[in-house]
Length: 290
Image 1 (cartoon, one colour):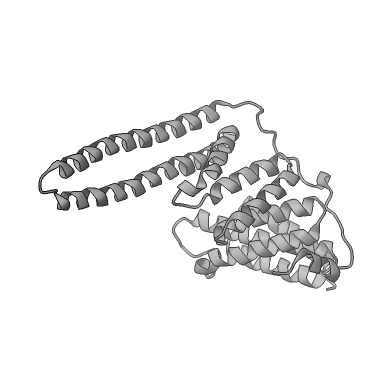
Image 2: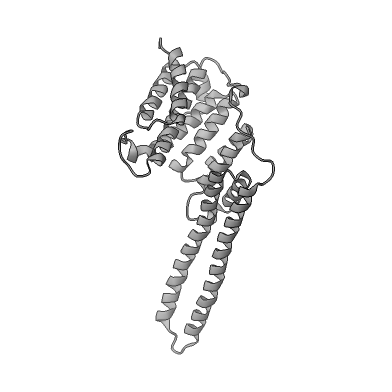
């Protein structure tokens, strides 16, 4: 992956995207609202059930171990069974705790319970080593909140740290890289934005490989989810095209805009698609002689 310094040598000039060109997002409540309280109650309830299950299971398992060890001769068969049961129970409880975090965090995002979403996401990232699944959902949730608050410098610092400390660079990091690329562009550094958007595309490609042949008329389960993934993929191409346009590399800009349009052909018509196509066509009009 090329470094930012290499991009600087290859381009003509540095341009910026003024912050006032970004539409102002709706204001988020300064204090928790009803949705926040509901989500935190669900979260607390899920964790409480997991803790009670853990303590109850530990009590009965300890009784079983004590009984088996006190027999003469020792009941080794029962001990082995209890050991296997303990391991399985540990994995199950670990999964339940993860589900309490991830499930409630996603519920909070759906209900626009921003305070609850932020609190749960930060806790999940703090204890992410304890979870069996990825905590990319938590990082993305926090970055989305930072973007809505226009905290772009904080978003860049947070996203960069998450990327560098995540050992497994898989498709779960694609939206994170796209967020950082967007923030770098808003902050006026299209060269760094190019680097992060190329990282995003590299990771998106892994996620999109199984559904590359899906067309707008193809009947697939969870059509909305598939369309959402394709739009994210197309957005990464469009953002990269915009970044190259900003540094006067019009050939690569046009190439990435065309790749974005090719992906959007696979998506059913919806407002998000129409807005993205309109923005791409505006750039393509400026590039008609290239």
